[in-house]
Length: 375
Image (cartoon, rainbow, N blue to C red):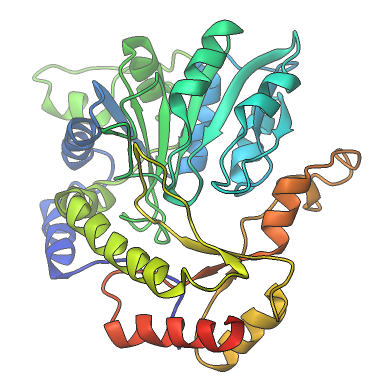
């Protein structure tokens, strides 16, 4: 079976994790601090704060930017449900915006039509590694005095107009889940160049504790911490961070290799007129965290039938990106919401295997099967 994805981890990561275990410091400590510094340098932000996962990163981003009960936050429905959930966590209301069917990223004109006097923020997702139009949303946010938060869960290593995702706006959230381009087993990161965001996120991730473990450990005096506000246990471990340090070293190479596979798919499938392939506009540089194919109306087989046929032939696939407003957790509250482009893209697209290292024979098998079933 050719899997849909798998993490690229080697003996290098295993050795660093082993060394950390042997050091005796396995919770949040010096390796987390090193990973944060390395990540900030890579994406071009002043600060980075490591967290337990991207969902907790999004939650803290909501808190530190002032999103609260009664506010509205515009986000895509066509995104993993954690995007909308993070808004709910602070008592605010997700308002679902439509996506551009070619990029699966938010449509700025539709977002503007949704703005009300309750709108506090826009949560902009870089879907499956394809950068959204950050500049357009920065202009929109400034025009309407809104907070812009980037959900870059899938976008580490991607670039927009020559700069890495993580350097364009005030607060950007990343994921290191195993399905992502690099991984720490699980984990997340917030990149920011705003000092008070950085300081408060570090406070909130460790129960609002005024003195962290590393400071207390290094002190030559007895220190007593205070818990200055209600916080959370959203820490990353040093074991995870040691893996992340090595993964960052490999990130550009991993993205380069992923792009080679993606471009082979595009070159080999571009003549099939019943499908739409990813579109990377000038100035946009995708990490191809996933590779999505959209089936047009005249495709000779339905999306679900295609997935079944591929599975029978030993090839895993996944449905198109979910639409949160149609999930049981949301469909009652959002029963009147209609997002035709998002719903169509969700129902008629599939994600095919892409990972490092992927054998040429496996890539060719995916291509041959798609051509046989669709051409």
